[in-house]
Amino acid sequence: MSKRNRWMRSCGVFFLGATMAGALHAQTTAVVALPAQTFTTLHSFDDTDGAYPSSQLIQAINGGLYGTTVNGGAHLVGTMFKITPNGTLTTLHSFDTTEGYAPEAGVIEGTDGNFYGTTFEGGANGDGTVFKITPSGTLTTLHSFDGTDGYLLSSGLVQAINGAFYGTTKGGGASGDGTAFKITSSGILTTLHSFNGTDGANLYAGLVQAAGGTFYGTTYQGGANSDGTIFKITPSGTLTTLHNFDGSDGSAPEAALIKGTDGNFYGTTSGGGANSDGTVFKITPSGTLTTLHSFDGTDGSNPYAGLIQATDGNFYGTTSGGGANSDGTVFKITPSGTLATLHNFDGTDGSSPAGAPVQATNGIFYGTALNGGANGYGTVFSLSAGLGPFVETKPSSGKVGAAVKVLGANLTGATSVTFNGTAAVFTVKSKSEITTTVPSGAASGIVQVVTPRRTLSSNVFFRVRP
Image (cartoon, rainbow, N blue to C red; front, side):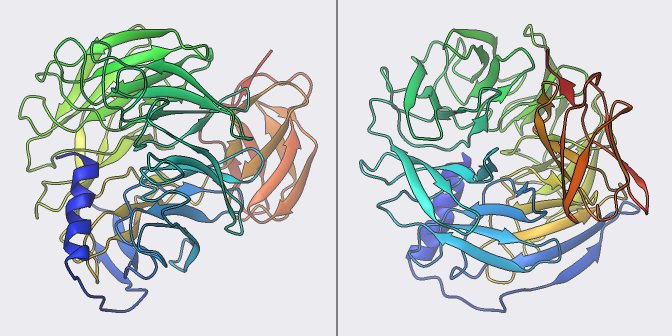
């Protein structure tokens, strides 16, 4: 069952007359079986503030966590929210059908400080939209799809080095099998590729851009075996199929790939593998695929979400089903494929997580569960795995002289910022933000910030572009 169908089934229960109950902020804490793993339910949605969060959260430069729900809110068709690390939730925007609804893919923070995202349906033509939302919650519809340029958007956007946004549609386009597109911040859309089934179909996942500028992605279906594909596409739209899934190595990938620190790409399939419960895989930029793990139900099943690579070098993700209570899991997997279950959902603390967790700069993981919680409408949770704080650069690459924002926790009083050892001039804007520029003579490497309490290192290498 796809992520889309899963939340539609939940919504069906709502529209048949589910009622609201419980407190707005149900706080529960439980220590799971593995040592040093502390799981906390930060918020249980109650429909008035949103229902069925299916996306990955992001941490913005102001330190807050942002996400979306596919239903609920003032118009019952989805919300965008902000939540603090301690669980205080604010609804920033309630969607309505005219501006698009069911924003199941979440949002990204653009370099201009605004948030950008997609809606599955709605808008001027009913086929979904691309939108911009200011930090205060004012929404602008940048584009309404009409079928010919794609329809039904399950995936989010990625902002490329050139400042434009890139994404995918599940259907529509020249052959009806979905598209890859580019859109500017002013709303000018270009269709880069229309899929035709043979090269993939039905794109649930977004794109990731590699260092050379090429994008990588997956299709849910189509390809040589109708089990989905992995592809790369240039910014001008030239597409190459890198891998055709065949069921034995996975099928129906629903989530975007991530690029690991080793230069390879990592992802999940929601089905297939040795036990037909989904897989975790690695693929080289040239297309050699290795199945790292096949889920078997006991350790989770049907990972709709992708992965993140944390500061310890391991990958973290969720499964929508399986585990000790059949309500899904949070897991850790090493680059070589050793998997450990960190948390088994039991319904009371959420169930059916459909988004990957995010590691905030305090070192703690935050995520959402599509269903369950105190009111049955899903939850926001945190998971402490004993990892320390770090800093994150936005963007993660730039030329000498380029402006860079450094996101972190407790940055007040910072005395030094260095790019791979080269000192930079900087300004502390707030306890969570430093502004700086790439210094002359800097080379690609770790960005470090010295504060009165500790030295914080960036979670990824900053790449100095020529």
